[in-house]
Length: 111
Image 1 (tube, rainbow, N blue to C red):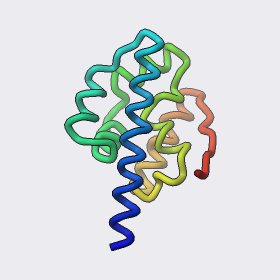
Image 2: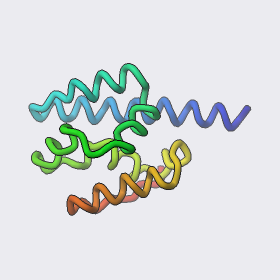
Image 3: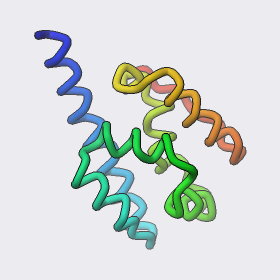
Image 4: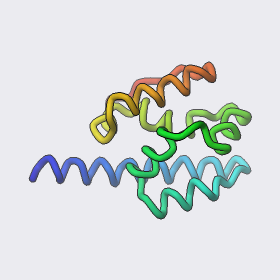
């Protein structure tokens, strides 16, 4: 029961974190509408898994062009250790490798 409550709380926090990346990208002149739709349809955990487990999407490349990979799904997941329990270790590693492959060094946040 407690485990489920913790999972649901973290899932809501991930929803909010990903929504914040959408808002920030929009402020910078890029509106990732497909990402927003996927996030609305699937919610944070499933949307993040979708993007992490597929080849890099257009939005990822666009964020790279803007030098803002910190706004990517991959960065949100990798850099926030509290979200790691929502993902398989292989998904976290895949996301980390994708970031490193673009010369982005993930930061570590433990909160």
